[in-house]
Image 1 (cartoon, rainbow, N blue to C red):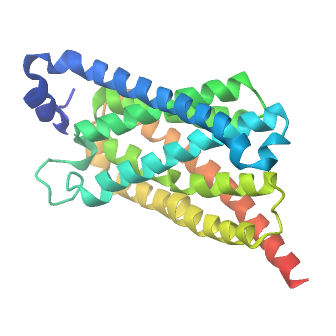
Image 2: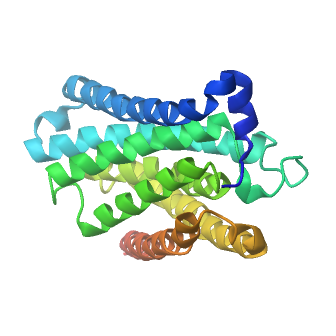
Length: 270
């Protein structure tokens, strides 16, 4: 399998002859940390929400679970936005001019950690979805999480295609707006200015992060196809199944967001 740059050189520099066995330990440790962080945030939400939000105390147990679940979903989204944003747009590792070879084969210890941490989140969230099914989401959420987990594991197994995985993780920037919309609805603030402003912000952020960014994703895959065709075979096939499926889901949800925004604007005119 082709060596990932500068990831493998970084691992050798830090761990020497133990770099190979250190890789699965790094992955497992970061994934467990991600799942544990979700549990900690969930517990904080469970303890703090009744003290700060009167609406929480009046919710059914099922809705309280969803409230707390959306808390660690938001926390993960902030982590992804900062970590992926740094790696994609501030760090030079994925710059065309960086001396690390083809972009599909670039990765770093930090990108490896970020992807593994998110794997822990998706496992934790999927476990909650299945445990409470279907209150936290239907089959589309199960499919979304399974595709995400498969993509993340393959990316870290090979240390390849991190650039593309990080683009998808960066699209989590829209998640806080989705969760805020749910919180406002649950608190009976559907007719508030905050609900309208958040809806407009969600529309714009979703357009850029989950539609336009995915268009750029596929354009970049097209320009790098000669290199992508050399990826580890399961990863190559996943590249042409998981992202298109996620993109179609994003377009469907974008349609629903636009429809909802138009309904709100129509009511305001009336």
